Length: 121
Image (cartoon, rainbow, N blue to C red):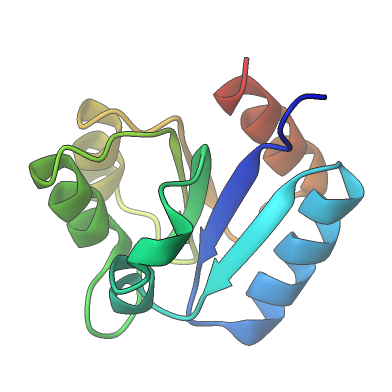
């Protein structure tokens, strides 16, 4: 029996976390959700996910700062970024650092499904 792929959702918006959790569970993924980048970083027990979907604009630590911290720690896995405030500079920075996708909010379910499938293929 194969292990169910785990996806971490990091977003300060509870509605976004809830919607993404429902969508991804319906697609067969294990989902762990976090209200902040710092909450994710503080949860060592769960281990690294197979993929992460994270917001850019969050209090405390932004999604692109989270990406940089994970890379500095040697923790590299596919990351999908979503933002309601897209900028070319941020898109270029996260994509150059290895992001799988940079999506505008609200991201449609088909795009989320396509990129999460790509993360595990």
